[in-house]
Image 1 (cartoon, rainbow over the protein chains, first blue to last red):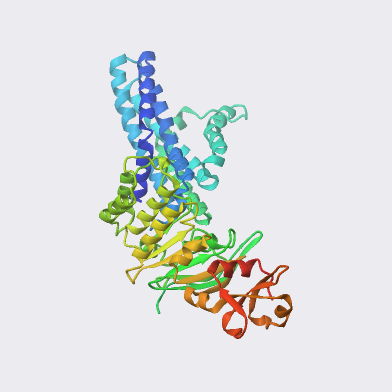
Image 2: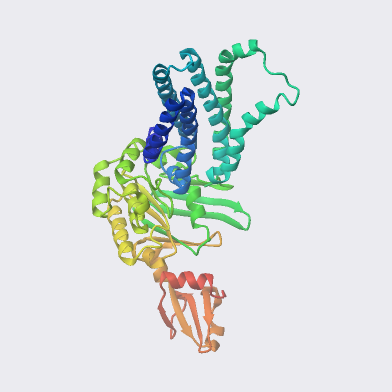
Length: 208
Length: 282
């Protein structure tokens, strides 16, 4: 498992330069527009793509077949991608937190630190939800075929939120929104566990 | 003799292809060549040994252990080389060394670096810039660097030039010097197999045609050349396959059964394979 994570980190590190350049661009953009959350949103988005990039590299070199000839189980291969996402997500949130706090000071932004923290935690939650949704799809169809479905998965939540009022479902009340931060973590954990179970089951059945 | 790899009645169905009750046994300390044409079922068999695909019947024992129950334990002692499967292409040799030291309990960085030097592999180049031969050598170096007891190679020498192939065959022979080590190598390049193998298993259309020691095969079979009229009088039970042309008949026969005035030439493994597949039988 540890070996698999290190392998993914090596693979992804090669792209670090491009990644850094893009993030610096958004950092400057955030400072210039005093829109402190822009940077956080982009970083979260990119981090969401990391496990997908890693899987694309795996696919290209037919790594999974090779890995399974080593003392690694299918479960190891699946879990390693979730762990990778988790590590990347945590690091992203820490960076986001640091950057936003500094930006708020620097730019005299109207965003309060509390608001910003909630925003970061919220984006973390979205990331967890996204990973939970996307990884089983990728394990099932592979990155090439899964790409389209992935985009659909990406926009599905947006679409649902946009459609809700049209379907006559009322906007959540202020009370419900207040509870959301307490409600979200357990719900996300359950979703994540279901996602992991499904991914492992998909992978156990897979033929290489 | 102890068998390092034992397959019994292994079966796997696909649309249009069935691996049909394949059985074979590789004694400890020897090299088995697994030959057959493309699509005969070589890779399918190897994938089943490694549990990369799910079997429909039969069982497999590696080191005397069931390959599904003791999968992880077996794979610690297995070195596998695939035709086209490797580390992500933007990695380098030192990265691979680090990763594998976390995957194999017995990973030996010194042995690995020795092989890297021996094979002249570049340390500061991405794998994507490796030639096919270099990639294959890298895979072999990896397979040999965790004190594996059994090497399984799927078409490891095909697509390589004769010099590199010879180099690799030498490495195999060196590996087999330790009598605890064994090799199972599939190939359709029969000359390579003939050079190194002790046993030869021939698979055709998903079925095992024979699984015998190489010496026995070469001793038992011969190419008999005769005229059409003579051929009609032969005992066909011992004719494994034949080809007719306008001058006469060439037939693959069991040598011992045709004493007397017949001209019987030595049959190579390739002859045996070709006559059995393509020659009209009996």
